[in-house]
Amino acid sequence: MKSLPRLGVGIGWRPEIDLTVERLTDVDFVEVVAENLGHGDLPESLRLLRERGVPVLPHAVSLSLGGAEPLEMARVEHLGAVASALDAPLVSDHVCFVRAGGLDAAHLMPLPRTREALDVLVANVLQAQRALPVPLALENVAALIDWPDAEMTEGQFLASLVERTDCRLLIDVANLHANAHNIGTDPAEFLATLPLERLAYVHVAGGVERDGLYHDTHAHAMPAAVLDLLGELCARVDPPGVLLERDDDYPSDEELAAELAAIRAVLT
Amino acid sequence: MSRSQLAAQQAALLRALLADGPLPAGFDSGRLRAQADALLSKRRRVIWYLRPDLAAELGDRFAPLFADYALVHPKTVQVRMREDAERFGLWLVAQGHLAPPRRSWWRPGRR
Image 1: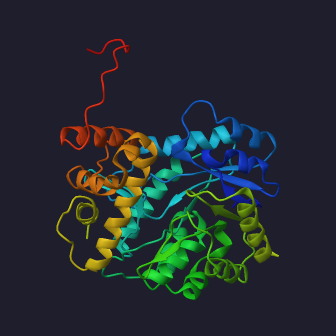
Image 2: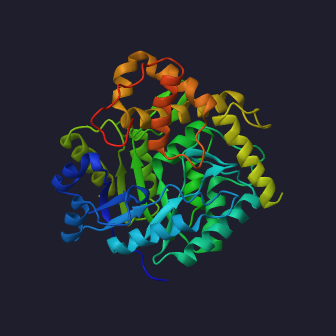
């Protein structure tokens, strides 16, 4: 097994904050949503970051790897092409489904935690891995709803996925916080059950509580509870990287820099 | 349960959340409503960015009219977000919520 690269502290590159990401002085790596890049030229900003030696990791949102319908290989091939264009050491998507029955949720929907759903996910992941030029990391999603008749915990579901596919893990502690709040996931059991030696990197993000539910908006400041969970993860493993996701209501450069500094403070 | 049964369950869940389909058994109905609302606002936010002209013209009517539109036009896999935005604009005109855009006389190929 190839060792996983050390990534450091990063931020999600978005076209709206491209200059901010270039200006921030302590960004060790970035992530780009693979579906937002075309097949042709890379955005100037990403080319510049690559020239500086900053790793740019493609992050996919549309493979629908947990979907029971056949995998759309064109989406996997696009992800692989983006990885090659960026010379990325790894790619990622989510443990979720996006499409079913001709409808598109345009969102990462949770899977039933059953053996059958796990079998489908494993088959799709193995098929995707065969077509990808670099390792695939898979991320836990945030849920507002929970499927009935779960046969395992989230941690057990992800641990089995790793065991059967040899995929890497991208652990989103903001999503873990959301699920602890919304569907009763036990963070301690989750972290204790995962094979953390397979951790590729970690996501953190902000969100908001509304009507008793925690919404993982990526449009608000990081709550202290998310940083606390990052601390709990760090007590178990030294994460190769931690990346801040912000997708809307972009704050000032100073506020983003302060959030990155807060992440670094947990890591040291 | 087979792969096709799982496909049917996933499709039924999305029909309930996106297309006012029957609520699938075993789910909390309040949570399904919260999830449906969250999906609708996420989609509405994208359209709001893609068509600032519609957002400006509609003002406070944007959100309720988009909810009406989305109910009869759930997002299908064939429709990209930009097409979704265009269709919302056409629907607004067809339903009489907006006046038709003035014809661009200088654009070639349009009569």
